[in-house]
Amino acid sequence: MGTLVNTMMVILSYRDLLGWYAFSKSLTYEVDDDERYFYGPWAGVQVEFYDNIQGIEIHEEGGEITSYTVYGNYAFPDERSVASYYSITSFKPWQVYEAARIMINQHEDEEHLWGGVDRAGQTWSWAAGRDNWIHFISRAQGETFKQVMENMIEHDWVPEYFETMANGHGDVDVSTEVQRTIDFFDNHGHMFISQGPFRIIEIDEPNMVMEMERWRYADNNYPLPKDHWEDRLVIRRFEIRDVLMPSRIRAGEDIDVEVRARMREEYPRSRTYDADEGEVTVIIIVPDDDNIIETVDAPIEAGRFLLQIPGEMTEDLDGSYEVAIEGTAVGVLAPARETRSLLVIEEVDEDAEFRVTNFNVDPIDGEAPLDVTITANIENIGDVTGTIELTVDGDTEAEWTLEPGESISIDETITFEDGGSYEIRLGNRRQNIEVSEETPGFTLAILAISAILAVVIYYKKKTDE
Image (cartoon, rainbow, N blue to C red):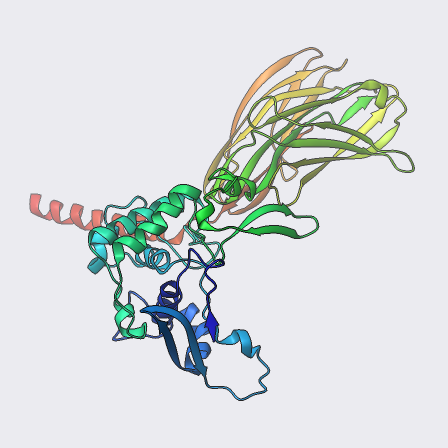
């Protein structure tokens, strides 16, 4: 038996529960080969539930639905949680699910509902992690569903499953019911209306605690801006693309470190951009002593973090050290981490010493054959003539010999014929690149075009003769 208490269920009605029941069932069973509804992965999860339901009895009083009874095919005691197994539970009104289904299928018979909608023609999916995954949370997704629902009102759209599966309660006032959900979205920026509904007050991720409060629609006093939780629950990764720092210094010398970083956002949008916020920490790991730590909490410009470890922090160092570079930001799943080696010496050896600046490798990924261009400025800051090499995985690709004080700019292009991961080094600078194998389809297409051209040329030659 299911009963709705009015003070707890002001948004979702019994029709929403029946609509969800009918909608979910339409995704579970194939009916007359209607490809608009059946969804195999959903059916695999739900078919047992629907197979075990023998019927639903709707109880009315004064023309209004007051409760329902679900009759299920089970014997007591049952290893399942019988009390909840047969309850009909919905988290959104039926029209939200229907709008999502329309965008996923984009069926030609329903083009009047989706044809002019933003992001029509794109691939939508019920499956998490796919492009345009239906999650009902982001405002951008809600705007798309809103347009579909406005078309549902215009065309007085009532899904067929209401008549065939909703126990005879298929009379739908589309304009009133759909407009109610549109109004909710306009007020709150999302369509995850839920039962209750309940509003999130605070989230404590480290302790896995979420504080929620029951909220009544009539109060109309939601305290947070529309996009608050979309921004608050953003999921992204901080990626360190390059670290520019010396590999050798004198004890007591400042260490200037430049970190180039980008952000890879995974929710609510899928995009990559130069990190315009975040925190970068450089740690010189000192065995048997306190580590040397320096942090900067903002980039000087998008994608570039600069910090300096002062000489007074390096004056007692001597020998080789591991340097850890970590980066993070709000919403980042886990800090990014890179390591470098640092040699600290008391006196400079009589060797050439090179400073490499403006080191750039472009592109850093692509399909074979891939032309990669390396540019940089090189200066011999040592006291003797020396040679610096450009290498790929340890093999020399180019080299330059510079006199003390001499500086040059280089611009080299290397072609990578095979797929794989490669490391490019120039002095103390390095960059990893990823080369994927050539797409077979592209090669076949080129061969096919070549064959066609050969035939055309042959027949043209025969005609000219």
